[in-house]
Amino acid sequence: MADRLQTASVRSRFPWEGSLRDDSLPALDSRDDVSATLERLAEHYGLNGYILINVPAETSSDFASNVLLTSWPEEMLRNYDHAGLFFGSPVIGRLRRSTTPFAYDTETTNRRRADGKAEIAVSLFGKYGLSRGAYFPAHNAAGLRGALAFGGMREALSPREMAELNAVANAVFARVVDLAADHHPGAALSRREVECLSWASAGKTSLEMSEILGLSEYTVNHYLNRATRKLDAVNRVQAVAKAIRAGLLN
Image 1 (tube, rainbow, N blue to C red):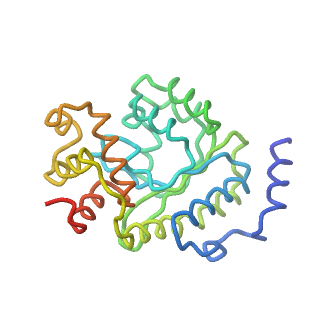
Image 2 (cartoon, rainbow, N blue to C red):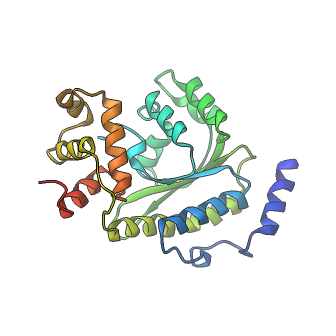
Image 3 (cartoon, one colour):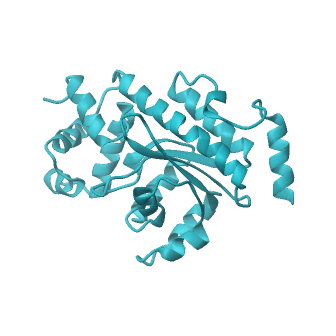
C-alpha cells in the first residue's frame, strides 16, 4: 500500500498528464535531454534507475560496452562484468530471442542461471535498489536492436504501466542511436584506447588483445568502453568506424 501511495504522489507531480506516448515526450536534442527524461520517467513510476542498451551480440565479451545510457552506478556495471554475470544472464538470453516486454525479479529470474551465480546477481541488484523492474525491447529503422529497462524495489508494474513505458522505448532508443551517428568525435583518446580500437578494427577479440598488449581482458574492455563513450558510439564496432573517419586510426 505504501508503494502505491508513493507512486501516486510522484505521478501527481509529473508534468505529463494521461497515458504516456512517444509523441508526448519532450524534445530530445541531446543525450543529456534523453538522460533527464529517463530519470524523470523512473521517478514518475516509483523506480530507482534506468538502463538503455544495445542487445549484446553472441560475440560480446562484456555488458558495459553495450550500454548506451544509464543511471546505474559505474561501480555496479564494473562489478557486474567483473563477476562474469553477463555470460549466464537469463535476461540477455531472453532479449536475444524475443521482442516482447517482460518484468523481472532478481530472485525469480536468476533461478534459471546455470552458472551458479544466482546469489551474486541477487545481492548485486539488491545492493543498488534494482531488484525488480521490466525490460522493453526496442529497435530503430535500420533494424538495430536494443532495450530500455527500469528497475527499483516497488511491486511489479501494472499492465497499463508496462504498456505506457513500452510505448516510448523505440523512440528513445532510436533517438540515442541517431544522436551517436550525428556526433563528431572531439574528446582525445589515450594511447591505450587507440591501441585497443586499432586491434579491434583488425578483428581481434578482447582476449586476443589482452595477450597482445600484456593486459588483463578486463582492462582491455575498460579501455574499449571508455573510448566508445568518448566517441559517443553505441558499441565498439561503431567506435572503430568513428575513429577511422576522424583520422584517429590508420
